Image (cartoon, rainbow, N blue to C red):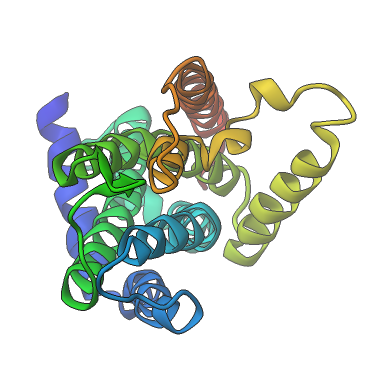
Length: 262
């Protein structure tokens, strides 16, 4: 099974590399990283470099990156349903759930690429324009540069969880419609509505998008020399994200299995 999935995933990656549209998202997050110093200047001799990283990372990933993942993944299946190309893919032979898993892996890879670009880009600019020597408070070194880097890396790894959840959610929407425009609109629209009603309905603790910025809170607070615990907030973030991936993937597999592809 996994051999067929990896082969299908390799085909999807090859298609993405050849598609000009796939480069729009990475270009936009890099543009955000490059332009952020004009809004949040970096100076030598202080902690502004860390504060720049703490500012641009959630901005580029939790808002812009999140929307880009929704748009990209919403268009992974619906065009092939509309054109009928999915019928040719599934005669390789490739089972429907294997096809869906390859698509999910592609969406997750897209989210990973965005995260890596923001991380490498922001730290490179911060290193070139400022000082990354740790955080001091009253002349005393509170957090070393290694501790700050580890906090960021752990935040980036944990931050992939809600991004992966967004990919699974958008892929589920993509399976339910033959129109890419409708899939993108539905994915964004449902998320906006859910984000508006989750607090009045007291369901915010179970919605993964509530925790988009949670993985970065430790790093952000350390920039102000504040000690913050990873848990229990990180537990809610990982738990709701994993639950979303499982549920959305199961629903997408069920819909695709029952769908008439003719």
